[in-house]
Length: 165
Image (cartoon, rainbow, N blue to C red; front, side):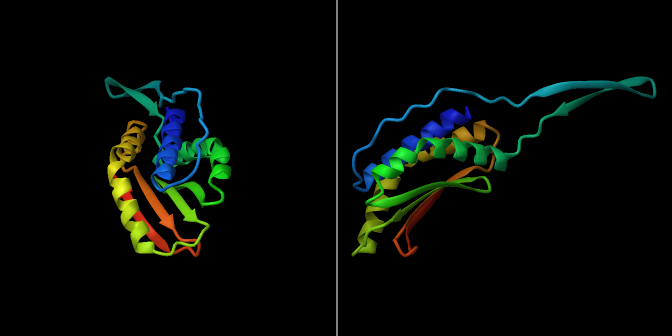
């Protein structure tokens, strides 16, 4: 499942880059794999006249799940980073239970407000994709998962950001 989420994240990366006028995309594939939390039966203990069954549950660590998903996605985007290197730097990171896509332009942006407006429109049109990633994270046990998209100028100034929950 984590690899499937990572694949979705890479595809989102591609769509996001295309929506702001980036160049050619190379096709990426990921083998499907799933991860399941397990419950192991424990021991019975003697309390009074009744017996209590103790169960050991592998607790889902949402931060760790997000970190693993981000690590899988980063394995897949190296070639994409090269394709877009003359336009922007791309990073996928984990911030708590959020997956953060950071696009930093390496070129001058003469009209930041116009780019911000274009990004807002483009990302609104793609909201279902990002909400799908959030849903996939929730299905992995990340109840408070979110996706944050950030576009920055080459000087680190925020052009546009949005969070999907």
